[in-house]
Length: 437
Image (cartoon, rainbow, N blue to C red; front, side, top):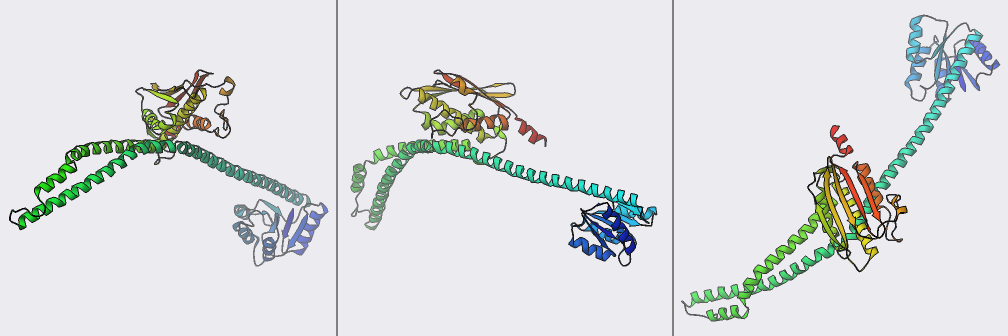
């Protein structure tokens, strides 16, 4: 503890220093005979306690006190005023400026020691509190940083799992789009050929009419019979009929492509990240089935029994991700039970009060009883190494329970199948809280 005594009387300084040293009050005691000298010492030394005379030449103790408390690096010094003045106005001004105690002159050893020791004890406690607060701040900053990293990691894992799911379906979606695109391209190739023939027919008519005008109704090089022969040879009667069918087929193909793209866009909710919005779970199921069709069509027949359910407040893209995870898991379980036989996935929706339910039931291989408790744990998977991350159900559970205030129930019998029931409130707690604020 470093202590500085300031007084313009050398005798008083020596007396005060002797008292403190005789009782080993501080580890280091410094003295100064003017406010200017004291101020310079404080700027160059780490002073803890300052015993400051009020009345001094050039710069008074009050002015020194005022400068100390106005500077960030000095304001932590604990100041005891030192004077023979005892008027209340001076005392009040000292305390208002930041002094913590007052020592009267002439020095009374017992009082002087008691007040200085009290100031030292307070400073030690302040230093201890500061050290603890600083340590807590460092720990809190570290925890805040760690929490931010965990949230960022969780967000990345969710996004990666979603991208992995969509990426896994990309080939299937491409296949579904490729079929109608194939005959659309074929139809346009045929239409291009027909258009070339119409262009040539148009040129024949133009030439024919031009020559007719020049020869005053006498036929020229292009005769009407030549045009008729061209029409007959190229079977324009068939072309005219075929064009209608080509346009109908092309329109149907474009509608199929458009439906798949709309379904994919609605499924992923590319324009919505963390916003609660009006969400129709039946529509979500239909869109999810569109993009997962190719993935499950060789394993299971999908049966839907979609009841009349209310529109709910939800983060639609995330709920769609949950539905996709459940459907793909059901298809995988069916395929694991038998690669040669088609299974059935039954999707049922119904409402009860202010809750909406979705049942996803399969007749696959089922889940072992000892695995049911670990089913929603992160990284838990019953799939072979390399086939599953163990994040699908964990993320689904987080989305349903933590983000939407819902529940996931599971019933399974080994060899018979599994049923997941997703229960969602019409208005999740977070959405309610958002509206209230």
